[in-house]
Image (tube, rainbow, N blue to C red; front, side, top):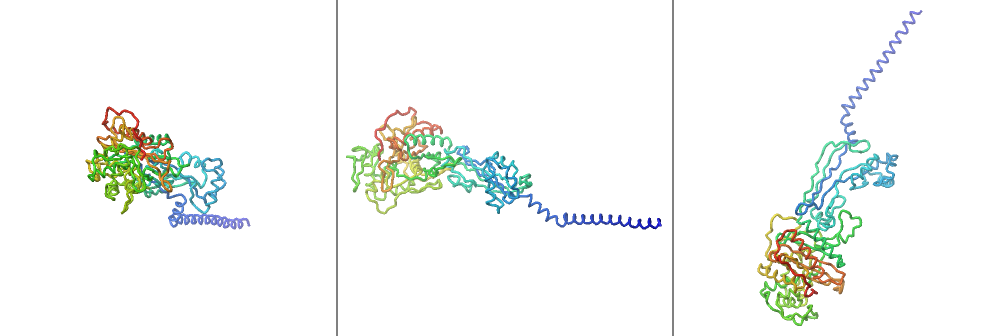
Length: 573
């Protein structure tokens, strides 16, 4: 009996072991099959699924080109900044982590929750752009799921408001909005690239895998501006505007031989690095956008036209008695009765009667056609955004009163840069060269628009304006011969001219014996007892021109200097 029971248990025991071994064998087979499936059959699919959950293709920011002055000083540079963004879907899955943002000065918990819930169907929203790295780090270190970062560039302007109207600025997307930044956008802007990165479960970049498309940096741009002269002109213009409580002003400094703009400043100005409380009226570059009637600064061109036509010479006399001239229904007046004077004195004393008689002696279309040669009524070659063409009427018939008014600067409008260009023609022996805001390698050929002998005579005549008996003795520069012309004009208002609102002007060149520099100063609506160009604009011109000549090491042409004195008369035209 016992032997039979032992024989019965032995087959059962063997069957159990066989069952166990079979079970493990089946498991092993399943694992092998699954491994083959995962590693061979589905490898590509699974690898792709893993990649799309951990690998990301991100933009590679392009470095915007640097804007420099003529000597390589930076005027606009790009600095790396951090942009924070969020994936709302990812963030909503981890709402319990939002409490980490409580009290954060960059992104508060309330703001984050509001943005995420408002855009819950999206995968990308901005949280903050252009942040300093330390500010962004204060958020990223909290490890809130759904918050990510990327590197961008922010524009910085080292000279601030001093160069703001020339250089301009970019928007948050690093696209030019004003000035050279806008005009040279196609050169300055680079081309963004793409890179592949690995992110961890919190969305942080833990490894750069490869650059799929390299970023192409923008081109650097070198301007004709000399930052030293820009600071100088800015300081003196600001001082004049504040002293005379003016609404605004402009100053332009040109190299007469190359046509390069060495300085261009305006008031009011703005800081392109901080535009939080920006007055949009301060954005425009008044030197190229704002128009005004040039007044007596136009008289040299009337005299030049008469000289080129062979009507007069510098010593030809003209009778301005009794200091008035009736033309149609209008009476043209001088500051006083100058009697019989020569043509040089017409400029020295700024005689409206004298230039009116010259204009009326010409053919009706002669003077406006002549002025067109100098660039009046046309945009200059600087091609600056928003530049005004000015206004030079093109009429088939001119009334006598219109011709007379044109001779002393009424009935047309110019910008400060156009006026500077015209005076540069006189200074450059009658050759008109294109103006430029870019540094040039060599002197351009230019176009002869005024005879060289007349141009040189005109410079000598304009020297008398800056003498002790002229209207602009305050424009004198110690050590240098200066030639130029004042202007004082009533501002145009609705319905005519304002009785108590003026623009004071001075346009001049130096050294007169070998002109190198032209400077124009415009003071808009001075609100003091002094408003004549010889009082408000000429002194600023003197300080700017003197500083420019000394900074550029231009040799003095009058080493003994000039005696101080008061102007014999003020320019009221």
